[in-house]
Image 1 (cartoon, rainbow, N blue to C red):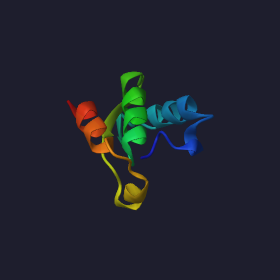
Image 2: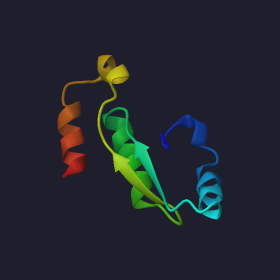
Image 3: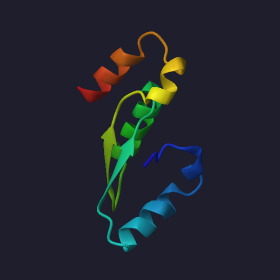
Image 4: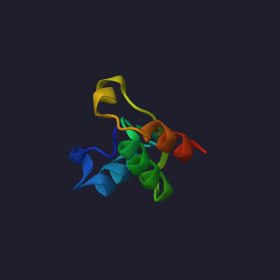
Length: 79
């Protein structure tokens, strides 16, 4: 899931509550860029009834948008 997506911006707590009510205990949230990876890590730190796991990285579709230093930022997030 891409929980940092604008699609979830207004109702992420409700989405997670519905997931918990349906028996979901964990969700893997995938970062697509350095900024996105940092955002999903922050979501994971504040997760409640559903544990959010993080996959940090740069999605191949977003490589043209990657900036110098982004890979180092991702490595630091993973440390």
